[in-house]
Image 1 (cartoon, rainbow, N blue to C red):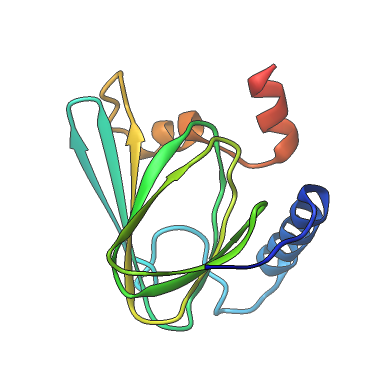
Image 2 (tube, rainbow, N blue to C red):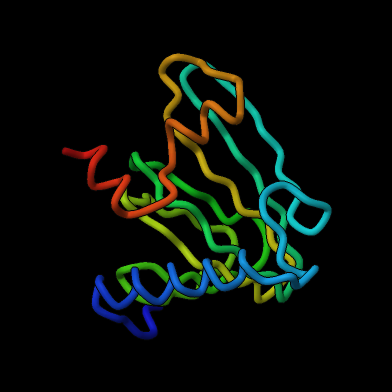
Length: 147
């Protein structure tokens, strides 16, 4: 169920500012990447990259900007997700087809398992390389990629 929405510009400014503040802080609770708090599992199939993340209740993740459309699945739990289209609460099991250019703020309302399924036509298995191909750090990079 959609709860609220901001303009695209307002969302982008707000989430970018929040992310910068969190990453620049010395707070030991702010974690970047794979960790015991947000463990990632990577799986591969012919032409597909599957990234699974477990989130503990109360955890918050700010994702990167996705360069390609993909599908994500909520296998367990309950998440509140904000993106440019608004804020929606999802309960498992469910799935969403995410458009390219999507950046999400994810809050775990319960212990959750969240799975992204990305196209991987070259069958790349190097995670760093996949990150560079599938995501952008900034909206400016995304805009340049699409031009």
